[in-house]
Image (cartoon, rainbow, N blue to C red; front, side):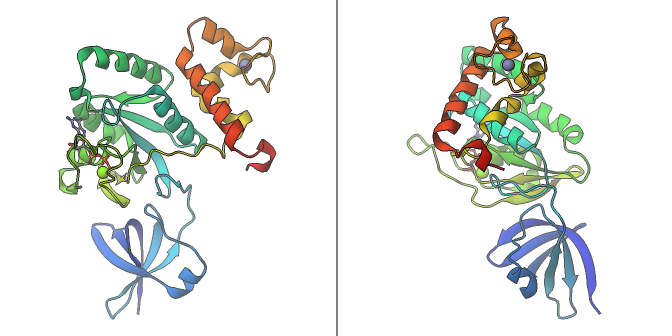
Length: 298
Ligand SMILES: Nc1nc2c(ncn2[C@@H]2O[C@H](COP(=O)(O)OP(=O)(O)OP(=O)(O)O)[C@@H](O)[C@H]2O)c(=O)[nH]1
Ligand SMILES: [Mg+2]
Ligand SMILES: [Zn+2]
């Protein structure tokens, strides 16, 4: 007699998968047949586990995914908790916009958390806060205080939902997780003077239960390839442009120099931030230079 149970993959180790089954954590192996199909279980996958009488646990099936992100590598992601640091690595609008475009392209909502706000001058912080006000206005939840984020999180992460931390190495993802869930005990590295970039303290994706859902800690990444985004779709990932573009004269308006462009009008009226528009142009250029033509993209 064997027993079949459904759980969620929380860790991948060489050849093993840790699966959370209710309150129980079991270490499983993937069945041979299933491995041969080339399916690779990912953190966040909902799976069937067979507990056999010899005490071996087998992962026997992966349920259909709602999505699978490449960066970070997590399945069934309902939302991203994006950690942007004020310093080390330094805050830049262009960088933040890259992340936001990337996740908009993946159709995953983003909540923003600014870390290390305690390490910058009040002037600098006021500048970043202005930006965050803008992002909040166009629909992103933004947090600067850990405590406020912690308080709001049960309303953000829905029951059973998988959310994942994302952001550069050293941004403070694991530090935040440890604050949100003290039992997590994720390793963090001290800010070092010479090697503060690319330390990659967290090397694996791990999923933690948090409130009624889950939050994954993930390795940091900074190189984001946006080349697979269709040039003609890019504007729709700048959410405030997308809202505005309904009033453009041409449905296919790219908001460059077309007549009757509502995005350009919004820019002139100061409703759309100039830096967002500049980032749009820069990303267009990058995609045009590095990507395939649109008709060869999915
Ligand atoms: N002063 C201050 N330091 C912080 C804050 N958040 C993180 N740090 C420090 O920043 C350093 C890096 O933080 P981590 O949590 O390891 O960063 P990470 O994003 O998990 O990095 P990777 O695992 O490499 O992707 C640690 O020394 C933290 O103590 C903050 O809000 N204020
Ligand atoms: Mg980390
Ligand atoms: Zn337009």
